[in-house]
Length: 90
Image (cartoon, rainbow, N blue to C red):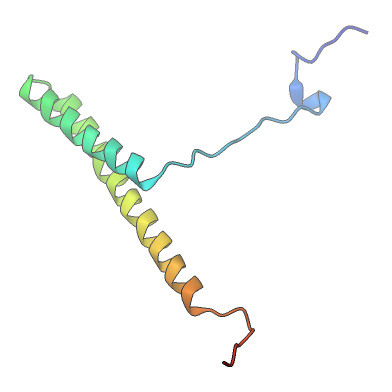
């Protein structure tokens, strides 16, 4: 029989690979600041609607970066406070 994998991959056991994008905090901040700069340039060139769309993307990106950094810091603090259960008496 012919190779019919192109018809429906799910029928032949081929599952799609969903990889999540793991951006660093620095990359997210740069993307947010870049969106703000692009919004300002668009506004200066006379495109207020496009400026509003691009500017509205900047705030969620920056808030996500702040949350990611906050969660990293709190995780480090929690890990520092918890012990492994082995106490050393010197």
